[in-house]
Length: 302
Image (cartoon, rainbow, N blue to C red; front, side, top):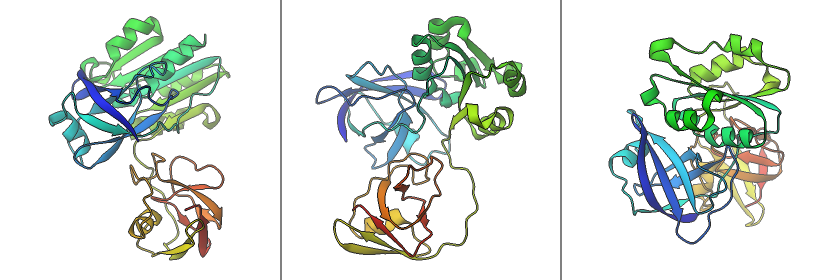
């Protein structure tokens, strides 16, 4: 974890504030557009937020937090109790939504889903690509960074205030695209579902804040062999690998506990994992908050 100090809390839309976190011990870890961090809040909760500042700024990170009326305690604490000057720990950046090189991009964002798109848009423009941002929200006043983006990027930014003009027509947008265009989309589930229906899978990249509902075979118990310690941990049918490891004294990091953030990644040395995450675990890895085993035993690097 990196030590930071909360330098600024700035309202950037209705029910949305931007936090500027300055490194307390010198430069912060580098990051690339699409990355997010875990923010450890003083109320013992850890939440994931996309970095929406400038990757060239190694002195501070910027994130934005929407006040969720059904908050589980994270966004409510940020909006009601967090004040400048507070020391906060922030994880190293992780990137499950990287920006791939392309000559043309269509970025689609809904509401707080604009946060990973902000640095992507700047990077794509800086690389000389042809860029369009389609940004939808209930109203312009409810859309974080809308005026900032329009001021910087001009006609590249198309704002859709859905209360006045309705939602953008994704099928029409898809029909206009050249074969060289990559599409990046982040927003509410309804927007992501519409994007998946409209755009070819090979050109579409999305980031979800919530996991997609999936069906799996009934859970079976299995054993996790921790290679470095020589200990074995039993994972019951009603438990998760993450919880079983925590109860056994292995402090594996945990953020979302839903398979969307990647903070609980562990290395699998033997056995067959059953991947239940929404990220796509790389070979030899698994996200142990939701994933299980298809073999009676997994050997992991712990």
